[in-house]
Length: 443
Image 1: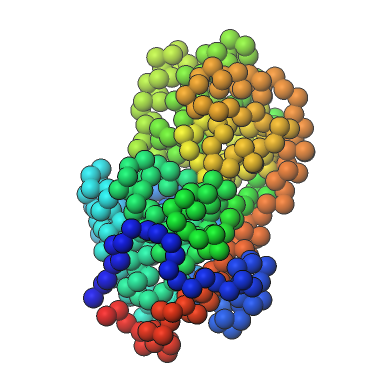
Image 2 (image 1 turned 90 degrees about the vertical axis):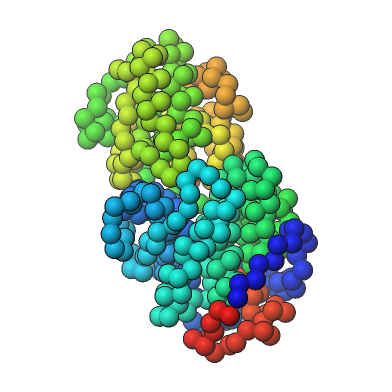
């Protein structure tokens, strides 16, 4: 029978990790806890799937690279209403073995505080089937809610530790008291919390997670795919005019990504830079799709010829659009460690962005111009004008992110996983667990 501790998150009551294991550099010591490759179940709703084939590519990149260091299987539930009418198992759309897409059953737009429970109930049978042939050592969840919450329930059901990676959406969920509590409940019961940005690590501390169970590991960037490219060559490849100044913004089309702010600020930019155009690269994602409103706004402002809606693009094409740009723009409400900023800089392009998440740490003065308030249209326009008129060194911008690789991210993540597995095995609850692989079953 499933037992859920409904106590309010508070001080950690488990034994802390021994000091020599709280240091991520103790990779060798952590690896000895199993003497083999770690077996990990990655659990996330943000992953490429038949309904959204370009969804969660940053999660995919991390999975691809950790799969070289650990045995990994992926369960990525897909919202039922996105695949309505499709019968039978959903086929993976990524060239990775061991990806499963059970349907996530929940009432859309309502009962959000129950979505984590619905996600657990939607996935538990599939996880049980997987465990018959893949007795995983740890569950790796992405996002605190609903994924992390459901993963903690799965961890309790199957008696396995959980690692939750925090990304920017925890701030959105935390706007409501009950949802904030649910996020805190999940992260306080994870064996390890990985934050992709410093502000997310601070949020974990505020939620009651002890310092020794928090690890900050920023996202990486694919430097082979996103690299310096001649602007004219990139524009020719995309069928764009070689002349004129081009701003590019990339992301799924939702209100919090701020494309509407960029469009509203564009008339002021055009007054100062008459040859300026904007390309929006992205399509619908799992969040609210506001593409219709964006097109209407561009039309109402007389910018139909100035704003190009490119649609969702694979990573190779995104890299071409970055290369074709004079500057990259991101006017989000909130972020963690936005990969598109790293990718733009890897292409040597200066960045205009709001100071959200880790952006201020990511973008030095020689790589772009930042502003404080996402709703300040004048500040956004002035930043775009400044970046278009500025003299930027693409090589210097590229060099700034050249050391940030997914391989390094993968190595550090696997160390965190092993520390979590060792801490879970050494804790006071270990005495109640069976140690023979394959004999454990939920009660």
